[in-house]
Length: 466
Image (cartoon, rainbow, N blue to C red; front, top):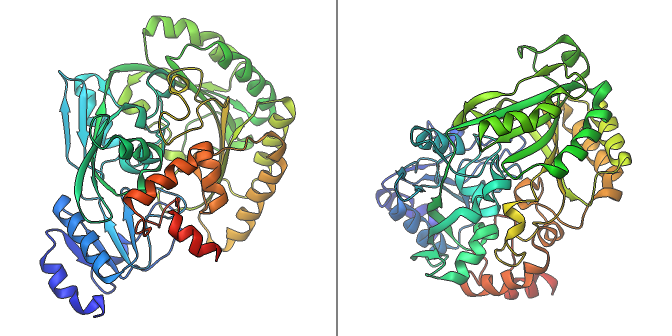
């Protein structure tokens, strides 16, 4: 029987909404962060709870329907949408804070901004998310970089347990003591093994922090980036610091030279003793007489969202990302050259220093997320609003990437990958890949969950090569 013929009964079994083409809310429900992804799913199921998720999986399995999983819809590669059934978790937004135990439990529709707001009254924060619009679910399952990563590690390093609906439509909990093999895989490659329906995290004291950026015009960008290279080598782990290159929006109140040339921002978030932070960051804030200095004391919930304006929802996005083996002057010059020639005024280039701290203290095979020891993570995010400019922006990004190849590591952060492909997945998981295949064989041998950065089970890999 065709599954559409059973859709009426399926609707009755769902507490949430089942949307199909022609329904009033369908078109809005199929939109995600990246406007380049323009798909028309056969059905979008906006789940109201775990029972809806289990019902969706069982229904799709019965009729052999392709499924994808959507949390906040922020993944730039568009893996949250497919042509079959979208299991949409965006309405599942429950958050429970336990300030005595220093834990928080969140459902998969929660964003990092929402989680930070709930934790702020308790002067607590969860580590994860450089951008508040990013979903807790997707970011954690693939890694979880954020503004406290050097002090407290990745989001997945702070994950205590996760509830999962498996490819069989069953419910289980994964933790260090329950289904520990699955818990290992969920921390870095989680989209491959099931639908995560609840996350329990350790949280940390972080009421008021020192955060911001020293902004330099691009004409002084080389000096600023060379200073960053030296400064970050001796930074305590209380300070997570990045370089961000962007062209300030016209309504951003910064000196005219930054609007004219573009900005090279050096900054981040200091979580620790604030007077010590003021002393530590003063040399960096004073270096090179920056055009403006935005550092100030602020709530962590504000700091966690301070860069949101750079990545607006609904724009066209094309990303390239990899770790760097180092940051020689030649790499700095290449980055600055291509930023200056970017065809779009909205394009953002990021250089992250995430290591030399808590991330490095977890062994590479301690979780599915492997790449913990590279000095920098490099990310190019081409962003534009006119679809007629798509080819130009993609071409520029690829040209930039080709020029940066001499400095790239054979490794990648799965959450920043802008495209899907077996080679990229292997780069992301490195020597952990074979162990992940074994886990996939156990929990999803038919590759039911395959609209993702996919770990192919042994059987389907043999079929693909036949």
